[in-house]
Amino acid sequence: MGRDRDPFDRALTALRARLVRSGPLQGAPLLVTTLAGELGVSPTPVREALAWLAGEGVIARRAGGYAAHLHDRQSLARLYALAGLLADAALAEAPLEGAARAHLVVPGGDALAELFAEPASILDAVLARIQAQLEPFRAAEDSVLGVTDRTGIAKTVTEVTWSDEGRRALRAQVRRYYRRRARHAGDILGRALGLTAL
Image 1 (cartoon, rainbow, N blue to C red):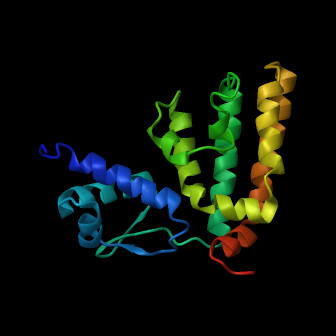
Image 2: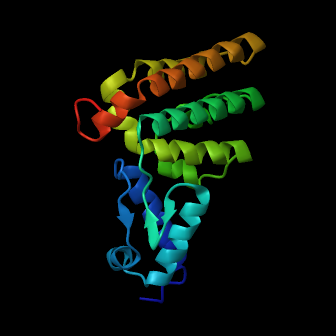
């Protein structure tokens, strides 16, 4: 077996996957030596990957290291509001061309795949990062709010004519989707943490 030529890339990919799929880690420390051992790389690429993720705002730099973000109702509501603004701007910027970019506006697929996909614009790239930060809350969203609005938007995307009227209707539907999640952020967070209420 040859030498691992890009341990940084491997560490970054593995850490992204862990953060996207782990559920909310609520301020848990991300220890370089522990992660390096789990990933089978030296501490240097893990430290570099954590610095990269902190630069993207996916994790936080703390005194002495890195940690997952600690969410409360307000911070989660702000994250949903930001996703809503970005999704609305993405819809205003260009047509979705069928379902090709619909998963960015309202995720239904693999958020991690979106992070590594070639973005159509910088707006798509930023929206993919925000969607990845929200991914640990998806199961709780579905539990609290159901999937009707998400499936409704997916259906609208496949049926909409890209007239001004069709685009306005879809944008209104997407804005409602994110406003609803922002309003229920406390319930979503509580469900994600396994609590009945915050």
